[in-house]
Amino acid sequence: MAVAKYAAGFTLVELVLTIVIISIAGVSIFAALSFNLRHQSDGMEYARTSALAQAYLEEIMAKKYDETTPLGGVPPCSASTTACSASGSFNDGEARAQFDDVDDYDGLDDLPPLHVDGSVRYEYERFRVQVSVNYATTAQIAALGLAGATDAKVVVVTVTPPAASPTSFAVTRTNF
Image (cartoon, rainbow, N blue to C red; front, side, top):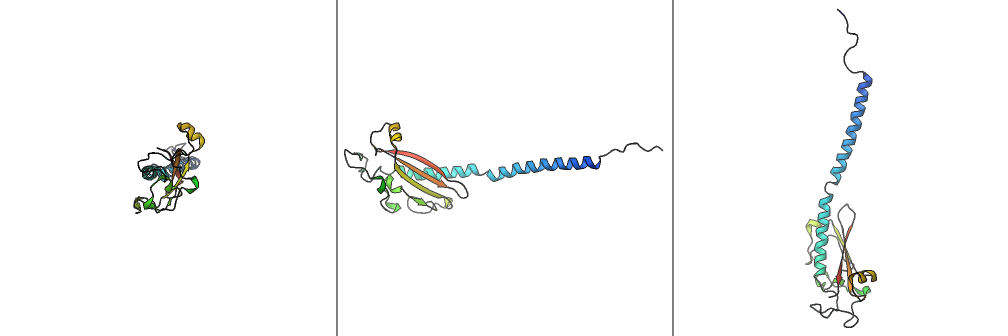
């Protein structure tokens, strides 16, 4: 009986190379999957952040323009009628329930975020909301076609979700 000259199968070198190649491919696939799993909820967090910012902006924009603006907004505060509040005196120390104009929100820092009535927004209890209000710059006023330095205010709401970087949302409120 004749013995086969070459036995069918793999050599040890071929087997080791195959294991190394499969290991490298496996590590790459698992690294990609791990990254995707860590960031799969980013879209949902951004949607929640946007919804919270929108709620605050709607609350703020529903208030009158300035402390000196009468109910209904007519006449608007200006140099020719009642002077508008100075930017250094925006937040006049009122409690949140008494906020009646856009300026009162300047410096607001809610952790956790609150409803307008002061109750906690439990669905956002680990979020932080900060608000700043300033008069618009000269360039912004010119771009809006306004004349007076106190004719527009920029409201910036910054929302910081848990374990994420802050996101800012800005709107311009004009004096009307």
